Amino acid sequence: MEAVTLGPPGTYSHRAARAVVDEVSFVESVTGIVEAVADGEVERGVIPVENSIEGSVTESMDALVEYEVAVVKEVVTPVRHALLAQGEEFSVVASHSQALAQCRDYLEEHYPDARLEAVASTARGVEEARKDPSVAGIGHPDNASGRSPEGSRTGSDAPGDGLVVLAEDIQDRSSNATRFFVVAPLSERSDAGGKSTVIVYPNADYSGLLLEILEAFADRDINLTRIESRPSGNRLGDYLFHVDFAAGLYEERTKAALADLDAIAKNGWVRRLGSYDTKHVV
Image (cartoon, rainbow, N blue to C red; front, side, top):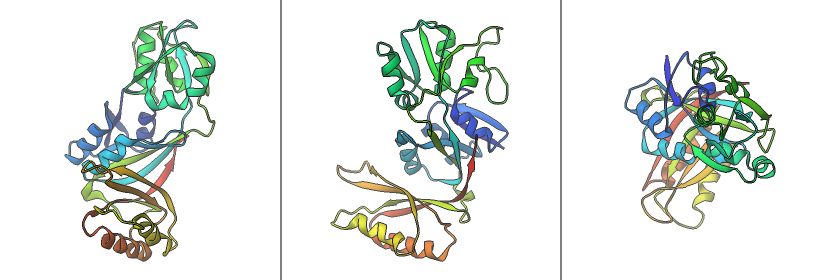
């Protein structure tokens, strides 16, 4: 089975994808991943959805609204950021915007004069560092050797193209971890699993609306593991809600809770993305 995820090889998304499939191909946007799955071009997509430091990945949340796909697995992987460069002298730190934010304190303390440049992925920043001695990248320490998780080269094939690991574990918190969703065609949605995700668009605005959504779960003793609002894009002040909870869609209590949500969102919709289990990757 093949999955598409954020490239180039060596990204944390690549590590997460390798934990669930054997073949991985790459694009440079989350939206492109979800669109490819929805259009039936690939069997699986692996997208980052939440980081323990920086919170939700908004592009992923919005893509799950724009395209109809199923969530079939959650992958959680620790994030170990290292500073990689050709040498001690550099003026730019290039990495994914999330990685730059996750290492903000370290960079401000040790490299306050360095210019921070957001690029498509951590691996892309490492590639830039490999080409340009004035650039440092942020990535997993293994990326310094120019090898991806399965041992293939991620940069030039020339000997000696490895980078120097100037510092390891530079993330602001040692507990840094990222959640990924494995998305599949809608036809593969499952009701079985320890967790589930739904998106609720009430298409309404009145006092107590959010409380009613919360009570649908609280009244059935269903633990919400995440709830977050996003603008609907239809009009200012109009929101939809992404909800993760610790129960399967097959459970009677879940069915009852979702029946309440359907009633609350009678002028909108409730999208059931599916139930899934969690895989932890070291």
